[in-house]
Amino acid sequence: MSTDPLSAGTPSCLPRHVAIIMDGNGRWAQAQGLSRSQGHRAGALAVREIVTYCRKIGLRHLTLYAFSNENWNRPQAEISALFTLLLDFLKSELPRMLREGIALKVFGDVDGLPLPVRTALKMAIKRTEQGRDMALNLALNYGARQEILRATRSMLAEGLSPEDVTEERFASHLYSAGQPDPDFIIRTSGEQRLSNFLLFQCAYAELYFTPRAWPDFTPACMEEALADYARRQRRFGKTQEQIDAGNSTVSGSEQK
Image 1 (tube, helix red, strand yellow):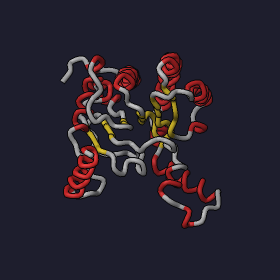
Image 2: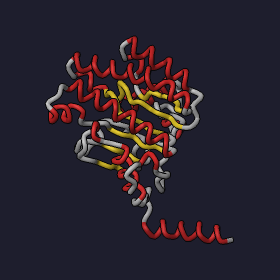
Image 3: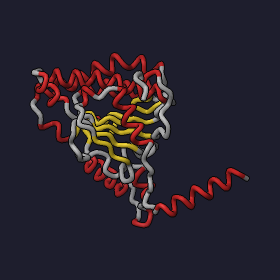
């Protein structure tokens, strides 16, 4: 494995869409004898490094779980620190997103965020909407159950009949509309659950759990996770015999 992932080639079997539950900032800070706000600051630095790495290797869709609906229950000082870091990120990274063709998108209720945050987000989304090389999705004020309810209400408001409700129509009402479902879900800091994250979209996603806290999740760790993904065989409900038969059909077609 390369010791310098930023200079490495594109990993084999690169997923189209990677989603990350960035967990462990607070526990990392506690272990270091630091405040939770300092842990979130270290986590923001990790975000920059991972986004840089993913853009470097050609990943087309990256979703980061940044702030859930449940996070409003945290102390107000911690919430304020998180939003300050988000504003700093948008200000510092916008020029690079424009330069590198990264389109910023938000999964979640933007209108429920503080005014300065939603103003900055909407501006950054508008400025970067022409980006074609990578979609960077920030899950903010997000919860999957709430997203599903929102999509259902939207279809009811359209007056759709039951037979018109298909998986494709439903997906078109989700925040992720127009993007492929995540192929690979990564969660840091040792927890092994989805925590209300992309429950509809990740039906067939491969899951990867690491004990490393998010501030310690470096590009080398990302490279290791992607190498693990490349070794897996995705079945999508098929048996091994069906997969082998399909591969034989493809090989025979290629030889003609």
